[in-house]
Image (tube, rainbow, N blue to C red; front, top):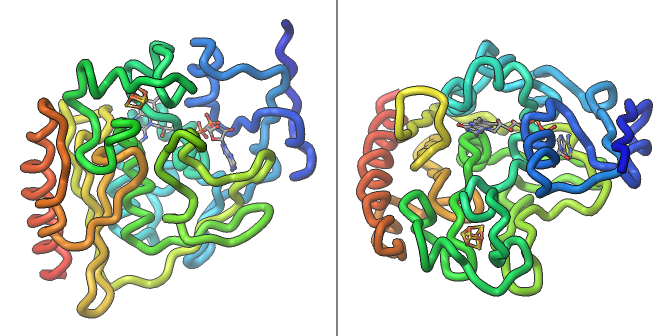
Length: 277
Ligand SMILES: Cc1cc2nc3c(=O)[nH]c(=O)nc-3n(C[C@H](O)[C@H](O)[C@H](O)COP(=O)(O)OP(=O)(O)OC[C@H]3O[C@@H](n4cnc5c(N)ncnc54)[C@H](O)[C@@H]3O)c2cc1C
Ligand code: SF4
């Protein structure tokens, strides 16, 4: 079947199609037959782009954020450490928040729970890079560095329908609801708003120095005497950590326990870094 590509002239034009911004996620998913669509709607002309004070348009690219002068350190560093320069030039921050899991079983179209099946192949099989929290139903590890940074920074998301804290954009997958994102069909992310923070940092463990998803990413943001910590790569959704001692309640799978040690080391370093700023 032919795939139609239209350019949105207004926010209403997305109805009935799949939104595409930079396409760095949509195109591979279409190519691999994971995402099916008859119509793609290019939303680049209708989604706000750029930084205005503490507001970031959802169409702003990771490359633009990496170079921004008024971007909190945690977000800038999360963007700088993500993907490759070419990908960061194409990747919008809105699309980054909605990227799908990198779980290899899911990407290879195993009929696992996130594809509507009744097994988690990773729990039973190869799960070295999978989740250490909330991994009972699905052990995927959320891949977005940027979502962890925004979660620590206390970001608010504005969509075509509402405003919500970033944490409420996500839910853990369950038997009844397998999708981890809480957007309604056709609902678009327009903007992110960041409250002021005194200091922030993002640290990332990867399996090579560049161009790799987070094995563990740690964002910390301090406002006055309070510090929020959020992690990437440790749970099916970006994970807010209630203090370093909460790592004691991690539930790693047999070959994932190393992530707890890495997370502990990075959280310690992140806390020291924001305390010293
Ligand atoms: C090889 C590779 C390495 C990567 N490494 C990293 C990494 O280390 N860290 C990291 O955090 N990310 C990484 N990424 C993810 C990358 O940053 C995302 O693919 C990118 O940000 C998605 O943005 P996009 O504009 O291309 O989205 P698209 O592919 O256009 O869209 C992605 C999804 O978001 C939806 N969408 C897009 N914009 C909106 C909007 N405004 N409102 C509602 N829905 C929308 C689309 O319908 C689609 O479902 C990597 C990706 C690749 C391919
Ligand atoms: S971890 Fe999640 S995505 Fe991966 S195989 Fe298990 S259910 Fe599927």
